[in-house]
Length: 387
Image (cartoon, rainbow, N blue to C red; front, top):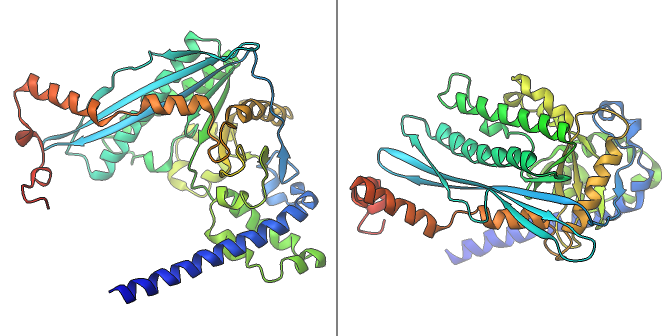
């Protein structure tokens, strides 16, 4: 057993070393040639990209006079015999920055809002239950975001997560969950319209993106770039095609982006073309108004995926994007190993629904209903033999 395990682990170590060596070599070449790459020379991708260069340096700006909100949602799902209960909470943390002193902080709806409790019927499939639970959390976040836009004059709203629904959250048209999904689409549209009317910059901060769109784009342009003899020589011994195939965008960009730099920006809709499950409703037209870039906010952390909403398709998109990033950068440089904007960190901490909160709600449910844990919980949850 130990011999077989050691053999497997040794093989895994070799694979990890191969990845790291390839990344190091690839990053060294890209840092050398990145100023020579002109993205406008590639028509297949140019229509969905607003930059000619591979990267852009972002200069941090003063936050004085700005009001910036961070919004996040919490989710807990409890399984019982006859139903599932979903606990959700949405909260906004609003930072008002003064000239010199630290920011004044406000909360919406308050500093510690109570979770909302929603029942999920077990007649739904497991996939539908997962979708409905996720949609309930998204709804909580979007309603808070809409209320913040009504209650506060906010310069920048940071949502923890994407500005658009994930394809896995889209149910089939005939599903019982589809009505909830339609409600979410309506909330997204309201948010886009209200942010545009209020003149508020709307940004999504995706902490752990699994996207591979940048890797795909690099795979389309690098074979042409490597044709140059000097670059071909530098790439000798580096299996960049293999690296692009196994890498996510964040890992790939981390090989050549420096702190304070962002990647080229591309339309969110260009990702959706590769996923037919997400393009069949008319709301997908909004995806072309969302631009995606990656910002290296901390020296030893991976780049953040940043989604930027801009309803105007004009030449000022780049300037407005970089202006937003110049405010996000100083908010995210508190620690060299963790580059998440402070408003998102605070909202995330307050949105989480703790085990104690969950237990109090379940205890209250039992007290009001007269039921017991043995009545409520599934058989597997009350196995006396610890299986």
